Structure formats: structure tokens, C-alpha cells
Amino acid sequence: MASYKTPRDRTIILAAAGLPIDAATEWNDAVPNGTTAFSSDRNIYSDFWLKSARLIERLPPATRRNEREHGAASVIYETARQARTWFLRAYVEAIYDILTERLSRRVRVQHLATAAADVVPGLVPGPQEIAAEDGRLQRDRSSAEIDQGLFVSAVLANARTGIHLCQTMLLPRSESADLLRQFGRDGFVQLGGASVHRNGGAVIVSFTNPRFLNAEDHGTLDAMEICVDLALLDDASEVIVLRGGQVEHPKYRGRRIFGAGINLTHLYYGRIPFIWYLQRDLGYVNKIYRGLAKADDTPPDEFGGATIEKLWIAAVEGFAIGGHCQVLLVCDYVIAEGDAYLTLPARKEGIIPGAANLRLPRFTGDRIAHQAIQHERRISCNSPEGRLICDEIIAPGTMDNAIERTVSGLTNSGVVSAVGNRRAFRIAQEPLDLFRRYMAVYAREQAYCHFSPALISNLERHWNAQNRTP
Image 1: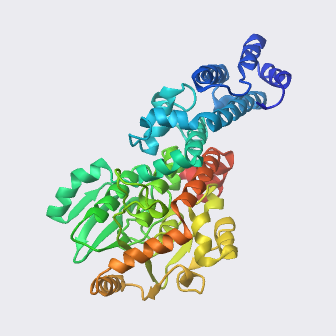
Image 2 (image 1 turned 180 degrees about the vertical axis):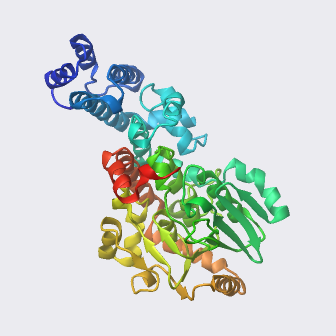
Image 3 (image 1 turned 135 degrees about the vertical axis):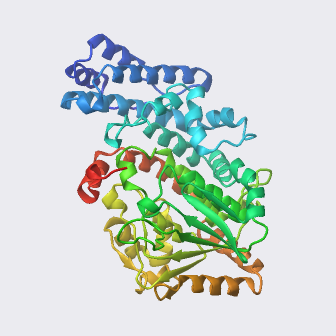
């Protein structure tokens, strides 16, 4: 196995940082050299990763390291991660089979990413290591979560395990089943971060994070996915409307705002774990696009499995920034007020905008997509470019009437063929296997972005995050 620098180079770098020569030599000697069999390699590689962790612990905390100590930490991390890449290429199916009992159990991505530590210690951070990061600013976190990204990327890159995980993330959550009876009785469920209520022949799902302009964060994600589940499972409705709730910001107080994307203040303060990105895009966003899958069936789309789907109408008031703009790309019909706008400021934030790189070019073409993602191009909804994404532009303050009219038009003659057509469009444009392969790359690249020093610099320069209250 090729390794980062030569053993001699590594020893020199570690010794220059003040690490004992004998410890550096012992670690160097433990660097794995290729793969042979899972039964033996799981112990060999695990021993190396645990030695790597102990060596990191002998260095000062990241915030107090000098240049040489940072260099030593980089060598240790990069060598260990290169070993993970080789190990996972050879054994990801074996690990996934243990975790899922040969695909007979369904394990959601956020649990999968920590449970792998029980199969091969050191492969990913365990729950205690993740918990130890609580309360730290993003700049002060250890970056151990990058190893979760490498693991999930390998799971998704493998067709057998990746499709199984994608289908798992499309299943209704157990919490949704518990709340479905309440929703059927009351027609309303309010959770922290999202709500769902029935309105005639439609169900309205709302982003509700009023203090932060309906931004998404760790506190809103579960609620949003459960509300999406309830809307899809509801037997009394045929259409779903996605809308932002009223916000508290003085500039917009009392107005509905579709949403401000990821909560950048929470991101800066270390309150959004890496796995959040994968749980979001494999979960509720993909459920809007593909519907709910069934555990006892084959996967959906080109694999033929059944889904529970409805038409989604997005109602854009104010703006749809970042993640909220991404969501528009999976809805069937977008109504926008004439003064609303869309942005995908991912480069300025230092992250990848979910699956927008996969989906936006289908709407706007490649050049405009690059300009929006790479160069922060703001798109007015009532512009030629905006109308490539938005189906209908209305006067400000008339959204309620527009929603009622659109829902009535869709439901008066039934929506059976509409659901069938959305499936047909999806299989032609973005089959499940294409999505799986995209998310394999996304999981790896977003992990490195999430822990990049550039992310912190961008948040301080463009968002003034250090002076905001989380």
C-alpha cells in the first residue's frame, strides 16, 4: 500500500514535533501494507488506527499546536486515512453485512456511521468520541468525523450496499408511525423546527425556525423528515405544499420566508455535525423527490420497488437561500412571489450545496449552474433565469390564493397520472443508482469541506459569525 511520504520522512516530521523517536518508529512499523483477509486485516488495521489516535493525543490540542506539531498531526491523519481508503475498498461489504446482518436489518446513516466502530475499532469515531466534541467551536473540533465521511462514501460507492442504504433512508421513520394516528385525528402536528397541517385536499409542510429565518440546523432536521413522512402517509390528501413559516427578524417580522439555508451561526459554533449533511440529503430531501420506499420490497425507480408519492408544490416567499434553494429542485411545481430571489452561496460558505451540483444544470443549463454555485450568482425569481426554476410568478402578498388555486386545479381531476409521470421523469433524469454514485463523492468531499480552515475563514469574513449569538 502506498503511504504518505516515506517511513523515514514521517519519522523526521514526528520527531521534529517533539514526539519520541521510539513512539514514532512503533507507529511507522504498524502502517499496514496491503490487504489479505478481513478476519486478520481488521485487527491489523484497527491496531494501526488506535496507535494513530494515541500518537495524536501526545500532541497539544489543535488550538495550541505550533507549525511543526500541526505538520505531525497532518502526517498521522493523512497516513491513517489513506489506510482507511484501502481497507474500505477491500472490506466495506463485509463491514456492512455485519452491521445489517447481511442486509436483513435497516440501519440509518447516522447510526451506521458510529456503529462501524464496534466492528472495526478505530475505523470511525465511536459515540463517546463524537460526544466529546460537544460544546467545541467548529474550528476546535478534532476532524475525526471526516472518517465517517470516508466510511459512508465507501458504502455508497459499492452498488450493493449503497442502494440498500439509499432505500433504508427512504423508509418512514418509527417516530412518524407513532404520530400518524395523531395527525389523522387532529390534522396538525407541530414539532421543533417544522410543522404539518391538512388544508382541504392538501397538506402543508412548513419550515419553522423563526429566530433564524427558517434556517436548517441540527434541531430542525428530525422534525422536517417526520413532517415529510406524515404528509406522504396521510390518506386524506393528494398534494403537499412546502412553505416557510413567519419569522422574527426585525426586517421581516410577521412575514413568511421560505428559508435561509443552513444555519451558519450554528455551523460556526460546532452545532452541526458532519453526518447532518448526509442524513438531510439521503433523508427528507430525497423523500420529497422519490417518495417513501417499502422495506419488504425492492428499491424504487429503475429497480421497480413501490413508493408512496404525492405532488409537491413549493411556495417561495422572500428568498430561498442555499439548502432551501436545493429543495426547489426536487419539487414538482414552484410558485414564487415576484420580489423573491434564489441563491446558492456554497463557495462563500465553503461547502458543497447538497445535490444541487447534480440537479441544477437540468433546470438552468451548465453555465448558469456554475455561476450560481461557484460565483454566488443571485437569481431573481422573476427573471428569465429564475423562470427556469420557478413555474409561476405571482404578486407579493397573494400566495394564499395562488396555493388554493393550484391545489384545486391539481385535485379536481385527480393526480394519478401526475404521480406516474413524475416517476417516469425521475428515472430518465436521475435514476437511484446515479444519485447513489453522486452521494458517494459528496460524502467524501463534504467531509473535508466541513473541517476545512477555509470554512471558518469564510464564515468570519462573509458572515461575521464570531460576533453572532447561537
